Length: 405
Picture 1 (cartoon, rainbow, N blue to C red):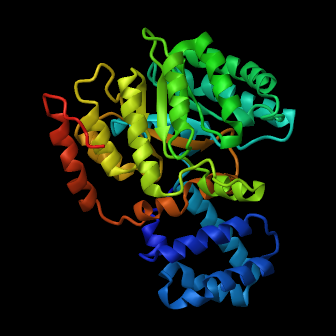
Picture 2: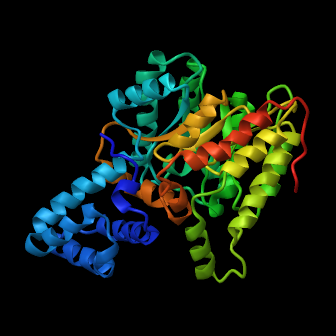
Picture 3: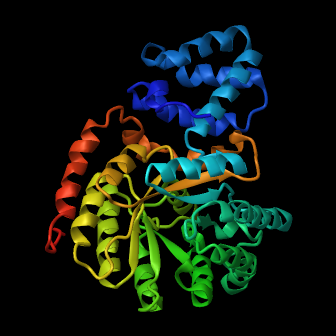
């Protein structure tokens, strides 16, 4: 079950979303209806006059029946989560793939999971992927299978102090999955990790790329100051006859990286401090990647970045093969791109096997943050249509147009 655009929940006040996300961060750790009701009143009491209608009955319930308030709230959280989680179990996942295929879009599946703390958890995560591939691989078109794998979820001792050992242990768990993916002509992305794990992340990819070629693909985060250095290493590693594929993202751990840097007393965090710096670096990485023969996949909801990529990749040996957007956020952009015959793939977080949608809150709190507010608050497609119109004209150009720095 999915709800409509979040704008129907939050109105047009960004402060409501900020406080809601902050509230969710605390509520997932609470079990007491009374504590939850008190926290809700504290978070939103000062905004009563500016709250959207769905919040108002919650205030009444929080006062007269904390238990009923808590049950209603949990239902609401599940509905909110379903807006950004593509499927819960095999049937829903297959339906999501079918629905987006009919819309002309491809999908990339990511079984929700964070860093594990035990080997039994890591083994279950591996088993979940093997089961997923076995159940859906033969039911979707050949070569359509695409998954994302987070290394830290496959080994409990994901330790930057022992990168070689950790990377080999993780490769042992990933190999059976990649062999299963290869059977159906698919591919897998080694998903991004926090800065502290960058060396392990690269070692895992290097080992597997030598074995599986571009069946395994890299995820590069543009908000990292070290991303340019990593791109250069990828360019050296890439085989001309089997070019390396890179999903280029801006990054999802900015707040954490800044906080950890402050705790450790670092003079500068490993991420760019300003959004414009990150945007500029994103475009530079895209440009350098294409020039070095890499297959760059822009994963972005940023219209100027899509225009930049289309403009710069014109008449290149390896132009941008597709764009990737997040399920639950990128539908409007994808619709316009598909109309212009530009390939789009949805990054789809899923629960597999079936689970509680509330378990997905860690993902939501990381993905749906302040940097996404302007897009989530978008209630009309008109601005998107106007912005994307330029892409069509760019795509129809017959000669290369150099982008401005």
